[in-house]
Image (cartoon, rainbow over all chains, first blue to last red; front, side, top):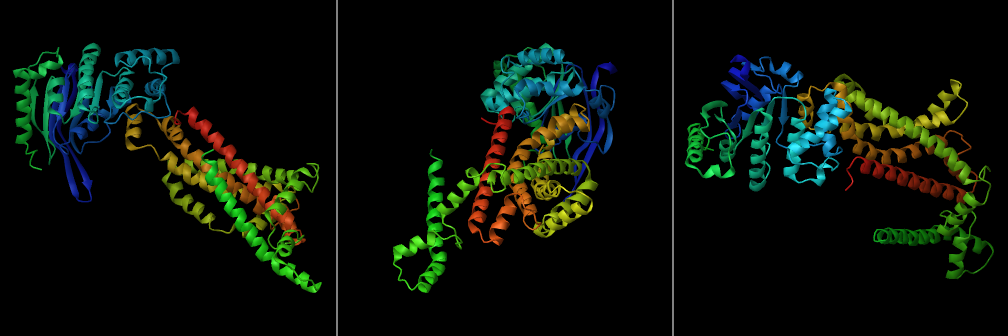
Length: 261
Length: 288
């Protein structure tokens, strides 16, 4: 089963040196993510969930411990373009059209023009933005921009999708809609997704596993295997099973003293 | 038209103040002349006398307009008395200096953004260079150019012009090339982009709005540089030379006309650069 483990972290620690002394962003974090998982990381600000994601992406280096992505170091995984990363802000280049933005990783990775065009079309279809290729980012709503940024992360063949609070800045209604779309996209593409959020319903609705984290030092306090089926209509959120998982997440957050400040 | 009204109001106020200043400044000489001829002078006579002098202290606006008109349309464009001829001489140096300033400014900015050593060593000198009075430096540049065998005045003038115009381009481009935020840089890192890809795909396009904004300042600085290059250097061609000759050889009207000719040239250049900027913005999808 080792080949099926996408991310494997052992006693991972990361300490930032700041002017106010060292900050333990991560302390002895161990976790395995299996292929096809949808893993959410939830916790209050400062619990290290984003830092953990950035370590997987080789955007931060751990101070201690081991981490492997696809069986190699995060740096090698990054260089072999093993993952797509979706940031909190869509971060589309304002001087490129939607199509141009999605082409950006493809240009850098050296796909030929015909292949670029084919992929842009297919991912735009996937995120329901067909026909918006020639539009500029400012002509789209916030939710559409975020969908475009997801399409950008899907355009190349990475099996792993790292998402850092991608819907954090969007309103509830748009967020529901995008959550639904993300689930169907995950279904269609068979990707492994690591998803950072601080919304309990979002984490429970989306995930096969929920990793509850707590701050000072950033650590994992609970890992919850979701009993919910893979096929999830939005109204699953009213079922007792859903509420029970949500309750356990809330308990986990409370155990980490996350509500004290 | 809504934009024109405030502008025209200001122009109107300036012209009124200008006329009052002309009457005031030129009245001394007019009164002296009247006294010498033993004539009494009423207010109306005085006003007329202050506006028709050949060598006024302050030329009246209509005199400047007439001199300018005569300078532009009154002579063949190849004549040494034509402002078109002199304007072209100045324009040529301005554009060469502008181009040189852009190349130097952009080149240095790229080096500064990519190398900390260059940043630390070059940037302070770039700032100091702008504190040296260009009027003092200009003759030296001309003399040195002459000493190394450059007969043509175009090159030293272009260098002086570039000396002034590279700086706004440099400062803006350094800001522009550093404009991408950490997230945009991280995004390219996740694609495994190399340094040159980061430059061409992100830093350069992100800097273009800064670049075009700096061009308006740079073109004006270029023109000033070209004119300064013509002033204290014994040049006989160019608007700067016309200004100097006008003031030194008792033809203040030519000096005033050359001054306004230079201002109009600056206005035209800025409008052209502005049009290029707008076209670029539209091309980049920034204009809404």
